[in-house]
Amino acid sequence: MTVQTTVPNLLDADDLEARIIEALKTVYDPEIPVDIYELGLIYGINVDAIGNHADIQMTLTAPGCPVAGSMPEWVENAVRHRAGVESVNVELVWEPPWTPELMSMRAKLELNML
Image (cartoon, rainbow, N blue to C red; front, side, top):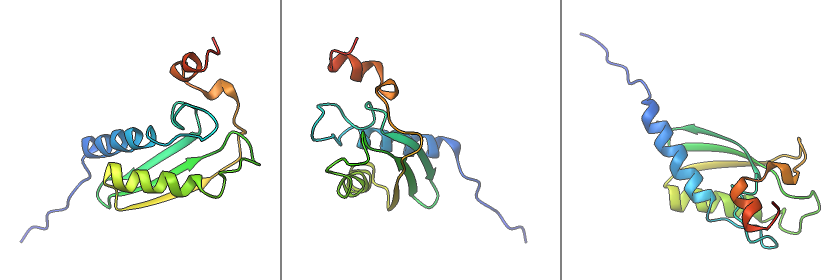
């Protein structure tokens, strides 16, 4: 009798990460009309395609941001509902501090920063 093991499919992980990024692009900082992904607030996305789980490291534009208590929940809800991820862990980090240089070109164009 042979035991067959399942090896994670890299394409599945890539697909899951792409769906997560699309979900993140639906979450906006209430004070800035650009999504959090383009703002550069997402520092890391680690996916477990087999477990349908994501760990997301993110920051905010400032430690005293009024949505600091709410934003991680918004991110978790968006990833669960829009990307179809069963479990999500959102970690709010402050290092390195966010700066406008972390914004994408798209965000800079939308905010007339070029």
